Length: 237
Image 1 (cartoon, rainbow, N blue to C red):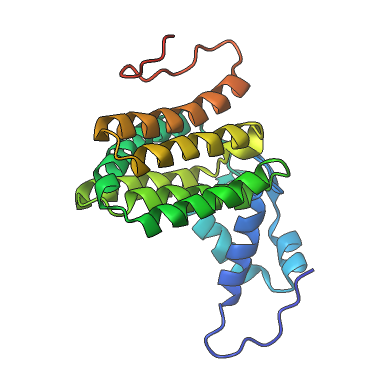
Image 2 (image 1 turned 120 degrees about the vertical axis):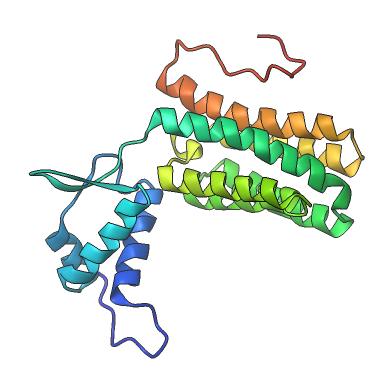
């Protein structure tokens, strides 16, 4: 049970505390899809009234993490497979392009920072914490695309990441084996950038990497489906 003391000036509101606490448990898969979120139980666990809990759940509902059902109440949203697929496909395209445009502008220090993040991910891959791994994954990709000079393209990349957060899915939680493959692909992308590879080659490598993560998730959900292939890839179906 969380028992917050009197909040000092500038401390998070009770609603914010409740929001962070509940969201952490949803993203970390402690509260799985369909889990019923009972106001009174959450308030008791948090050591507060139901009012800030209700406000927190409204915010989470706006983000798509929580749904309200008539005669049932609040539940953790089910994963929308179709929406997840569309966001991952789109993010693969725009993030790949942003990474390619960013590549010539990255300094050796930028690449060292990205490599250090990937090294941390490598250490986590065998004893996986999906939440931490996913956070580091975003940090890694951000290090490679944030120098992109096209502001509109960057906006679309940020929009895609925000939508992924709203969908609440971490592929690594469902397909832990994907983590080790992911860090190897990261290393390959880093090598391409470091050696000044053709921008199109970098773009396609980043796109294939994103789509491989989508493939891993969808294959688990539907083992009989054909994998997503990048039509511009050299790979054969």
